[in-house]
Structure formats: structure tokens, C-alpha cells
Amino acid sequence: MSLPLRATWSTPQGLLTAIEPGPAEVKHAAARLADFYNDPHNAALLTNTIRFTPDDVVQLFADARAEGTRPLLYHRGGELVGDGDLRNITGTDAEIAVLLGPRALQGLGLGRRFATMTLALAYEAMGLLRVHAMIRPENVGSLRMFGALGFTKDDSPMARSFAEEDDDVCLSLGKTEFLAGAKEALAEIRLDVSESVETRGGSGEMRGARG
Image (cartoon, rainbow, N blue to C red):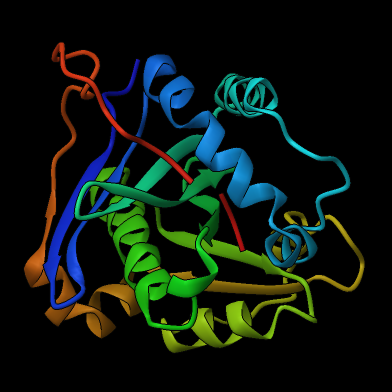
């Protein structure tokens, strides 16, 4: 079994952490995650059709892990502020999803920082070569964020295979382009593929969802 992913980044906006949670950490975070997912603005962007309970969140994570997804919880200064994941993982490619939960924190650049940390884990820790993002055309904020990270439109058969809807905007970014464009950030991000908080015997305040 792969060791849990973990990245930390000390920024002017606080200490940011992206950590792959274990079951106990997901359970601890489930109520707050449900609030994030059920927020009307977030739910519209995520195209959620149900109202999540904490138990639904726990099951969502369990199902995702069973399918090979690598989920992440995002924290700022120890406070859970969002979640994301790397899903549909092949030997070289994966799809990224990022959600910054609190409305008050959206639009301030934090989502871009967490996405950068997730990409660093994808390319540096997991050895992937290309990451894809499937964005709804009305999700202007996510289109802008991924564009700023260097993602470009990709309608190749591989990219379109990740799409859930015919009108999803398919974007992708290769490892070489990411490493060249994120040198400053990568010099500050610490990657630690090691034991999870619960494995070490601690308790964590973990996790958040997509965009």
C-alpha cells in the first residue's frame, strides 16, 4: 500500500498543509466537509445533486479510495479549509480536483496554492507525467485558476476520456511545464510521503472537496 501523501508550504497566508487522510481523519473532518459540499455556491460548482451528511462523506471517501483515488485534506494554520484529490490515475496521468470550502477564503489565491501543492505531489511524489482538469464551462474561477497554473485546453482522446459531460472543458498540464513554471513555489514546498497523523498515534483535524 502506498504511503500517505503530505505537503506543507509556509506562505504569507499562513502555513498550508495538504495531507492524505486515513479513515479516522476522514471521520473527524466529515461534518465540516459536508458543510462545504452543501454550501449552495459550492454545490452548484460541483454539480452536487444530493445534500451530504457526515456519513455520506465518510462513504464518499471510502468509495474513492477503493477506486484508487488519492484524496487530500487542505489546512491553513491547522484549520480545515478544503479538500481535493488525484483520481482516475493511470501509469502516467491523473485528474485533479480542488475545493476551497469557506466562501470568505475563495478568490484570494489559496485555491491556487493548494492546487500547486497537489500538483507537486502528483509529479514529484507519484511520478506522474500529465495531470488533467475537467471544468464546467460556467466555473469561471476554476478555469482562471488552472489557466494561471499553466493548464491549457486539451481535446485529445486521453483528455476527453476524463470528461463526465460533453461540454466539460478539458485542460491538462505536463510535468516539464509545471516544474519550469513553478520553480519558486517548489523551492518552498516540502513534500513528505510518510505516516499519516492517525498512524503516528495523533489526532488530526483534516479534509475538504473540488472545483
